[in-house]
Image (tube, rainbow, N blue to C red; front, side, top):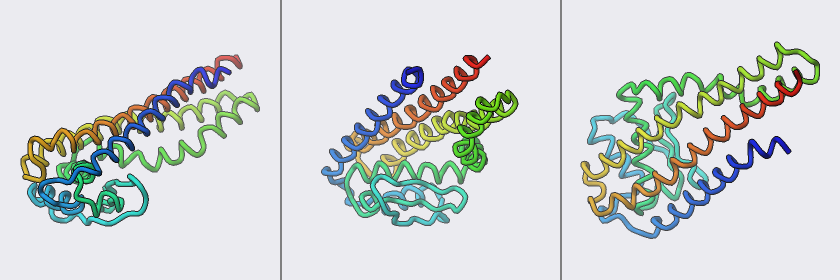
Length: 222
């Protein structure tokens, strides 16, 4: 029962955020950008206008799987973004281009998040088994190691918030400055980014609540 006390609020927030993002994306996927630019063309135009010409843009499978890979300097756009000239597609593509601009300007939070990726992957896979082993074997040191591993996951989700917010802020400003959307279109293109940001907030809340749950397990065993 105590698990759900910690996790249920975060789960409800995550569900709401995901459904809202999909709903807003689908709504503005039906609204064509006056420029006629596809998501891929919009991202390329934004980057080129900022003097960044070394980013490769790839078509990537799936729905809303769009992301920027800073290690390979590759911007990957899902078919619904890469090929579409909707305001939703343009907004998402410009957001991902914002991450490429972060890399080009050595934006510190993005660099830190990139460095944390290997540690976070290990922590997300091993934290719970190590915590469980520590509790079952009565080994406080093992339990605390598991907490430390999961704490890395929490830090990663928290650092992600300013990274995503900054990328969206760049996109919202530059998509107008570069003539990709008109000032009247900008709020609609930006609506998808605002909805998507809530999913990152939900992820951070979920990781914090999970860590608190793990801490409560340790306190009950004392």
